[in-house]
Picture 1 (cartoon, rainbow, N blue to C red):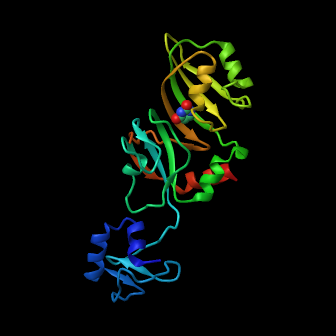
Picture 2: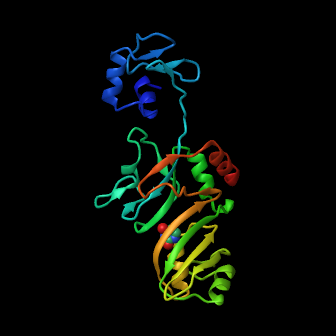
Length: 236
Ligand code: URA
């Protein structure tokens, strides 16, 4: 790959800054600073250093992103900010794993590892997704049962068993829902099927990965090695 692309992927700086660092001799390949931005390098066999520090190139990156409301899970949108507006510019090949509605907030995994993404979303793998939601009225034991048995949300098949837990009772209810599918507007349609409306929706977990409660909406961080290896077991 090109040296400047590798450095940009590793978020060393903007393309302009990277060119400057190279020109000023701050970047070396196998100890030589006679390098150019468009030079082909292989990070697996060459020692690439920047400001004297060896770089360990990662082909794949994995981010946990706290998607805020009013942000579209797409690469481009004419009206709203997209998830990509919050992420490092240099990683153009990044994609979100699955989608959240414009008004839904919470956990989105963002990666350039297409295989992991495909496996986490595959219906055959039954990877769980956990949501918290505010619902516009009280919920009954029958509703919990109906979620467990499967609901007719207007598709050809009933929804797979879902676990509904009421966390707060009252004029409105606060709930946790665990599902193993990812149908379009699934949570909202499940509540609509029992005559209720979702007022607020947040995804808190996907498989073993739980949204870090120190992240604020719009913030992201890389997955830890343990989080990633557990996630890979989920999709295995
Ligand atoms: N279910 C929904 O209805 N919306 C989402 O964003 C995610 C799950």
